[in-house]
Length: 236
Ligand SMILES: Nc1ncnc2c1ncn2[C@@H]1O[C@H](COP(=O)(O)OP(=O)(O)OP(=O)(O)O)[C@@H](O)[C@H]1O
Ligand SMILES: [Mg+2]
Image (tube, rainbow, N blue to C red; front, side):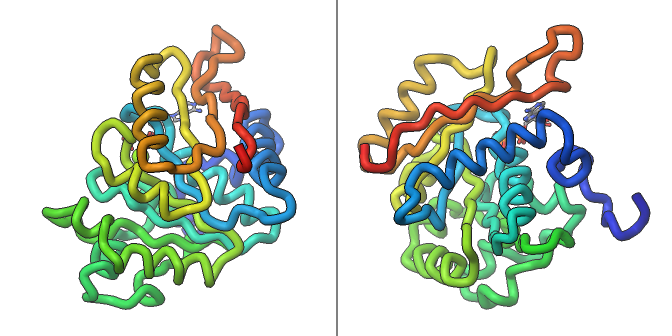
């Protein structure tokens, strides 16, 4: 409460209700990611889902906070240039960000903003460009990923749905692995299969799935979250 919260969203449950089962679920997800490749820890991942509104952005934010709480330096890049979201969670502005770095208007360091949460910095989407795919598929994007990786212990990229655009699959090949968020009772099975196929086609490393919006207590619906991690090992 108060101005120090900068109008941060109360959906950042890991920050505001760290003892809740939902926060615990995000920490379990964090732990599972660290178990995936103990000898060669993942340092850059992306998140997506087959369809819209399955909870990609909120999962990115809560996962990022749980990693920051674990004393990691975390950078989040909002690469959903069609539906910018990350800045809203922290009550931040989005005057300049990724798109402006990609076009060379500003440098990476200039674009990176403090979120107000220790250890967590955010590169917002920036100005919505007319040509998101071109920007995201550029060499410059690879440079931005490299810079972000060099400046953090963990880079997490929020991306559009896999089915919607090819950007997500292409971006997934530029990180260590991609996590697929699946909204229970919402995601269509053939869409999930199709998303996985699209990712396989470009040889993206699907490191696991997050079952989201799973109603534990029917009476309280979505108020309860539960994540199930069912990933494949990184080595296959
Ligand atoms: N575990 C959850 N429990 C309850 N509500 C959730 C949960 N995860 C996400 N939501 C809600 O679902 C909606 C979509 O979430 P979010 O924006 O994170 O999804 P998205 O997959 O990033 O969507 P988009 O495709 O628009 O980028 C939001 O209203 C969010 O509050
Ligand atoms: Mg989103």
